[in-house]
Image 1 (cartoon, rainbow, N blue to C red):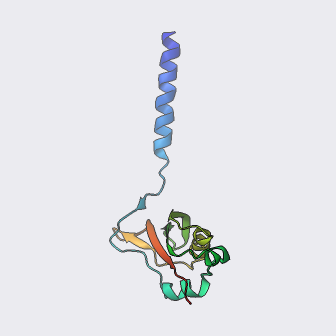
Image 2: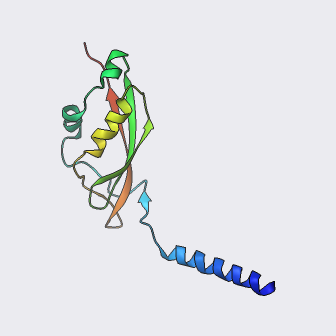
Image 3: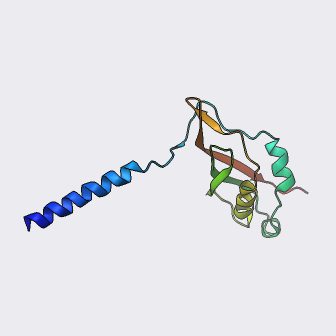
Length: 127
């Protein structure tokens, strides 16, 4: 029984050290050089964002907040809705953010790094 317990403990230690060798890239929240779009982001959103019919019919307005990662190469990934308003606006916000052209990546200690970015998108009906 003692040998079995020793083997189980030994396997646990080996498993933990094997997992610690795998280093997932850290995703930063704050960096020295903030990622940015090297194009007019407002214009891109206004040209590519379509007001959903359901939201228009039900007079849904508000702000959808999308969180995503700007990767080391500037590409956008891991998009999620932080705050939604429904009526198809959340899905439309995600669609447009996923289609964003690459950004200038963020930097920390002179190295390009992954950075979380939060983007509010306003949906406002006009007459």
